[in-house]
Image (cartoon, rainbow, N blue to C red):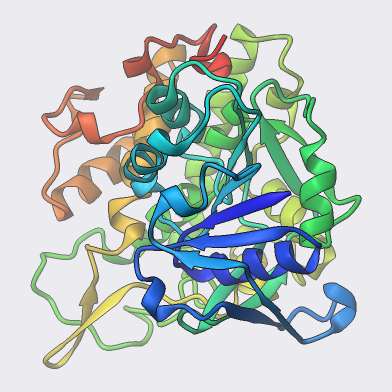
Length: 396
């Protein structure tokens, strides 16, 4: 299989290395090919993954910035290492080079944020199949840009979203072999991926708990008021808000399940604690509370809060994706579906109002998604979808 990995972020080198080691022809399509080595690899810091082996390396077949050099012959296109707010831009660049008559698997390492809606909106009709991992297969980072990544911890179980949720093309098997997660990949669909607890379920409430009253001027010192690590040093207040937002998500899913009684995936437990244990299993050392569980998850240990260094200390980095992506591609999507099913979301509303002000956007106005910047959001309603049809995307 010829696989093109599109991206230049934390997961790009890792997925490309694993795909090549699994026996596939691999191209990396990136904006800055001059900064990338054809020999890429990663360090594995998870003793339960890959038999505890530490270093992996492979030489890919091509590194390029020109989609014409790799997309036409690709059997699989995997977007990995691209913030999800670039999905429209990426797909528009790839679209002229994708043969609509050929069976091409178009996937993402982050299946939330309406990926299937975006791909279908850009490509229209065709013989392609859309898929994605519901969550990133591992918590990961970069050791050397363009050359070496790092895996902090793998997911214990990985959901693979497909358009019908039934994986008719056996993508679980293909990805399981590439990722060395054979037997750990299970079925899901894109609607569940859009609502499953993910980055927008945790980053915004944590940051809201820390900086709800920030005036845009106050400078913080790293410490109790401004923890360095977003998970490992989560505060009791932020953990409480993660739990409250989780309750609102669960209520949305429950109401949506009533509108779609035949969707088996909507009957699963969407609570944050359940999702954490699903992803990381018994590596979570203390499950007595959300606060303790987040603090005691080894895969979470090294992720930092987004700050900008200024004279005298730090301030929140409102240009970071935790502020700019998790809102229009996450919380606003939740809110749109909540409006479809008539579920009140007071905390989600409060966080949207707070966050949109920080980034100078207007999405939510008087409890409705009618702000001047709503065109930037991933809202199923703008694609003409309803609570009865939102699971189908636009290809049915």
